[in-house]
Image 1 (cartoon, rainbow, N blue to C red):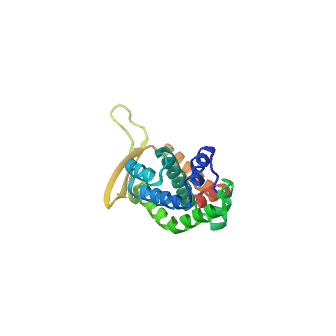
Image 2 (cartoon, rainbow, N blue to C red):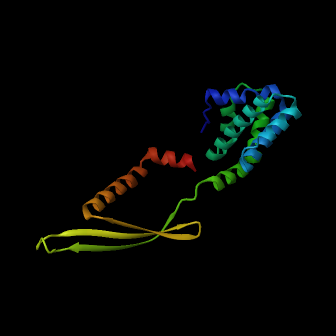
Length: 199
């Protein structure tokens, strides 16, 4: 699978040949460091002084490398696909090898950083349900008014929470049909391809 770069990202990465091979290694280290710790404008200023380059050039180079490394790591692009993806940039063979080595050295760490940054969503623990039917009231002697009450227990960050939901059976049947339809859609080739690329 090839990584498709937009014109803006190509422009950000276009500054790499100007700064030189040694500086690309420094920018790559800075990009991984920024992924790990977050934005640090002083780090770009320090790198710009060290490399005798403008701060904007360093920031664009770091942003371009961060995108290239994170997207490639997220999609687990193979070496050949990575080389083919950056070949469109028109860099020298030496610079392409340097970028490939930077990717290979850091992809596991970047994947672990991305995993830590992913939101922790609640997960299902258990479900309790009850069916209530009102058969009559003072004003109406014969009526049937069913209601389904559910208590959904969720786990989130070692804590357990509960959500109480109440609905009528027809809405519940419609909800079940929609969920079954969504599960059926997940079995299509298109959805499998998307899910495989998200891993």
